[in-house]
Length: 179
Image (cartoon, rainbow, N blue to C red; front, side):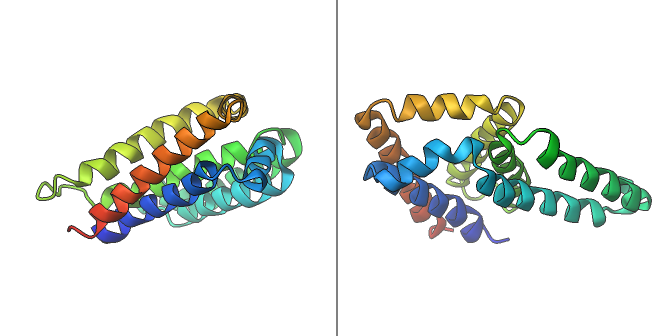
């Protein structure tokens, strides 16, 4: 992946998340409030995260237990299927955490050992914060619900966070074209 794409993708995602919050879009706010326990969102996000993880398991190299990829694949597929049945609460939040963790690697690898462009640290800093939040929220998914309650308690808070996300997304989008 190129540095352009690795910086532009998080920038666009932040803009797409921030603009509806900045505009205080009622439909988006209602969707975000119901997101943590949404079965549809769980199917989409946890399903996508599980599929991506299983793809990675299937393509393990011999140095990474690749000779055992079939038993690992079956075990993790069983665990993912049982998660839908046994722990359906906050599965959407866990799915987003999985996707953030899996997406961070190719985005970080695009700038690996690249010391020529200091502006890459805006992207890397965001990704490391995202990784830390994904681990924390993946382990304690009810924190996402608590954060959304806090966020939507005041409209000014929603607009402020939306503006911050949009501004950082625009910064990343602009930086992407400087490489």
